[in-house]
Image (tube, rainbow, N blue to C red; front, side, top):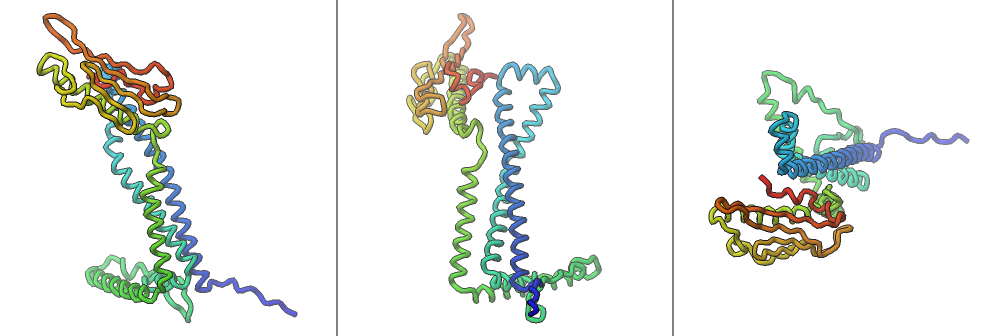
Amino acid sequence: MATEQKNLAFTPVRTIRFISALVAFFGMFSFAIERVLTNVYGIADNAVKMGRSLSESAMIRFASENFPTVKKLLGVLDQIRELLPYADKGLLALFILSIVLMIVAAFGLAFPIQFGHVLVAMKCLKWQEGAAAVASVDVSDSCAVSGRICSKLRDCCRKVVDACKKVLAVFKKVQPKYWIFIACSLAFVLVLVFGVRGCSAVSVFGGTQAITDDLTEKTLFYIKAQKDYFAKNKVIGGAKSLQMPDSLTTDYFTYRVTGSRFTATLNNDVKECPAGTRWMVSASTKGFFTVDLVLFRSAPKDTNCVFIQPDFKNLGRK
C-alpha cells in the first residue's frame, strides 16, 4: 500500500509562522545589539566620570597644560560626554523596537490566521486562489524616479488610507479574547521598558554610583559655598552663613555642618565598607597680613571604603 507523501508546501499558516519567525529573529538580534551597546555606553559613561574626577586634581591640570596628548584626551572625553544623552535615547528606542518585534512575532505564532488578515490588509500579503501568499512589492511602480512623482505620491497616500480602513475593518472583527492578549502584551512591553531596562542599566562600582554621586554633590556644594563666603567676608562661615542645614539625612549619608567642619556619615553597610564611616572637610585660615582659606579633606582610612569616592581629597580643588 503506497504511503501518502507529506505536503511540504507553504500553506497560509506556515507562511505566517515563517514570517513571524523572521520577525522574532530580527527582534532578538536587535535586543542582542542593544545589550552590547548598553555595555559600551556604560564603559564610556564610567570613563567620562572618572576623567572629570581626575581633571580636578592638580597633577592632571598640570599635565593638560604642558602635554598636548593629555589635553587632547580630556577634549575627547568632553565630546563623549556631549554624545552620551543622545546615545541613551537611541538605546531606549532600539530596546523598544526589539521588544515590539518579539511581541508581534509572538502574536503571529500564536494567532496566524488573524495575523494573516492584518498583513493582507496592510498589503504585505495577498490572497491567491484562496490562500495567502507572500506578495512581491513592486518597488519600481512606487519609487521609480520619473516626471509623475506627485501623482505617484497621491496614489501612495490613497493606498495608505485604504489600507488603514481595511486594517480598522479587520480590527473590528477581532474577538475580545484577542484584544485581551494584545493589551496584556502591551502591558508586558511597558513593564520591560520602564522596569527591566532600568534595573539592568550598567552602574559604576557594582551599583554604588548613586552613593558616590550623593557624597560628591554634597561635598562640592559645601566647598563652593565656603569658598564664596570666605571670598566676600574673609571669615569662615557656619551652616547658617552658608545657607545650609545643620543636619541633612539622605538615603545613603547623614550630613552635618558643625562650626567650620563638614562631615558625611555612611548610614548603612556598602559592600565591605561599614556603616558609620565618615568623610570630613575642615575649614581653617592661615596667614597674618593676608589671610587665606585652607580646606582639609579627610577620607576614611579603611581601604574597603575607598571605592565609594577614590578621589575625595581632590574634590573642589581649582
